Every structure is written in C-alpha cells, then in structure tokens.
Amino acid sequence: MAMMRAIGLMSGTSLDGVDVALIETDGERVNVVKGHNNFLEPLGPTGYRGYADEEKALLRAATKDAESVVAPEDRPGCLPEAEAFVTRAHAEAVEQFLAENGLSTADIDVIGFHGQTVIHRPDHRISIQIGDGQALARRLGIPVVSDLRRADIEAGGQGAPLVPIFHKALAEASGFEGPFGILNIGGVANATLIDAKGGIIAFDTGPGNALIDEWMQERENKNLDDGGRTAARGRPDESLLAWLLMHPFFVRKPPKSLDRNWFSHKLAGQLSTEDGAATLTAFTARAVARALDHAPEVPTRWIVAGGGARNGELVRLLHYHLRTEITTADAIGWSSAYLEAQAFAHLAVRSLKGLPITFPSTTGVREAISGGVLAQP
Figure 1 (cartoon, rainbow, N blue to C red):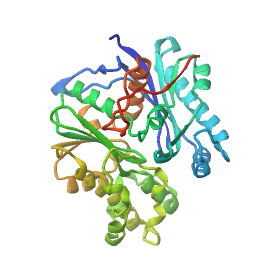
Figure 2: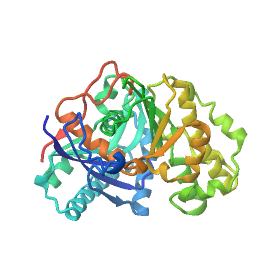
Figure 3: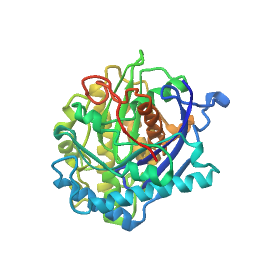
Figure 4: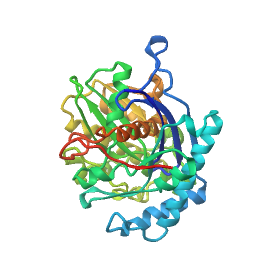
C-alpha cells in the first residue's frame, strides 16, 4: 500500500497543550530510518502549542461540567465554549507547524484529531472528546478523522487505549521482539504488552502524571514536579498507598480503561508538599507494577514514553518495582513526548482505509473494528 503523509494531534488529560506530529504510514507500516547502531531517526517533524493558564482553567471547568453528562450528545455548562476553543487551538497548532516546516496543506493527506477528553465512562457508553472535526477540516483545508473512540464504545468496547496498534507497528519497524511492554505515562498511564508471538493486550494501568501535576499546581503553583525532584525529597504514605491500591480497578482483568476523575490529588490530604508528591508518584509506579498481574508473559523490557518518561523519580521507582530493563522512548530514537500524536496520525490512515483500530485484546470490543468520523474540507 502507498505511504500517506498524516498529521496527528493530541491534547491529553494533563491539559498542557497540543502535540503535533507528522509521519508517513500506509496504515500497516510506519516509515522509519535506521541510523548508527539501529538507532531510529525521528519519524517526522513535531510541534507544540501550549495552553495559557486561562485556557487550562476553561478545560478544567469543562471537565467538571462534563460530570453531569448523561448522553454522548450532551454539552452542559461551558462545554460549548471549551469545544470551540479546542478546535481553534488545534487549528492554530497545525497552521504554525506547517509554516515552521515549510509545508502546505497540499502536502498533507489527512489529520488525526483526538480532541480533548472531558469524560470517559465506557460502562455507560459515554466517552466525550470535545473538538469539531468538520470545523477543523474546513479551516485547514485538509481531511480530518476525529471521534475515534465512538464506534468501539457503541460496539461494547472500552474505547481505550487506542494507541496499541501503532505501538506494534513501531516495534516491528524497530525490529523489537517480545515479550516486552510499552508504557505511556500521560495524565493517565496505559500499557501495551507484546508477547513472544506478537500478540498484544493493552489497558490503562492507573493514574499517570495528572494527580502529581495537580498536586504541584495546588501546593507550588507549578505545572509539574520537574524531574520528580519534589517527590524525591519526600516519603510516601504507605497506609494511604495500600488503601489506594485496593480500588476495584486494579483487580479487574483487562481490557479496561480509567476515567480521569476516579482518583483525586486531594487524596494526599494534609501531607507535606514533598510527601504528597512522593505518595502520588509511588501510586503511579506501583499501579504499573500491578499490571504484571495481568501479563500473559512478564516483559523482559519496558519502553517508557509520555511526560512521565522525563520524571526521574518516577522512572527510578519503575526500575525498582518492575525489576527489569527500562528504556525511555527517546533513548532508542522514539519520541517520548509525541508518541501519542504520531499514533493518531497512524490511526487516521487506518480509518481512511477501513482497517481495524481496536481489538478484543485492547478494548474488549467483540471483534476488531475500524472507527473514526471523516470530515472533508
């Protein structure tokens, strides 16, 4: 199949901004170039449009207003305003990216638009990612595939995680063989486990960066715990951790996905800033370790991506609890920061070609299905 040039857009539950990534893919394979010692050259250029404080506040308010949603079409409170903003911010991100890389709209075949998740309750057949795919396509003059979770949710799946099929394509392009795991730590953390025969299972493992980020925002007016330095100075509250890990989510067999609102940074209560950060960081790491309870083969290697890959204390704890080789995505030529954006570019091409994007072993859907809604300019 012919390669297509696709842009992927991702705005995660950490609410930091819009990631933009360009890749070449035919929906099955991704175009990579192997350099010295099989180190991969970047798949393509990337870009970023950060959110200002007032924009983050709007998205946080939208997430809170979404708690009253009872049907997928509901847009209570400030959700209409937030949806218009998300669409505009993503358009600006793409326009800036094209200009910076000397590209025109004619150079891009399709855009994969994730949107902004404001609520994820698959057991109630609801998962809402705000953002208007048709308006984005019209403004940019490029076909847009959006609403990538809906078909899976309507067919009885969890609608998440969506990235495992891209993880598998990237692993194959890299020449990796199982058993190994790919851990993406965004606002929520999710794992893709690939066995020795190339089979995959995937699921959310638990909170990622979101609780830590919110704790630091409340206590220090900082967007994150830079490098995990605050957590490294604290001591985790073991009794609180034991209680948190008793949540029914952790004993459920995969496929399974997590609603961002199931856990709150306020659980750390009256702990000091350092001890609270240490506790929430340890919670993320130990939740990942619990994922091994569901692994058909224990991974002999983990590749860590997402914002969590830059948290040195979190990576140290993962080394301790997983007790196997751990490599960050950047260290092998993948992109820790832009892996999910790249994935949505890949998914957009798969959607265009009618290829499945979710599977019984990744979302629990009855059979492998495609998904996404195509909007033409």
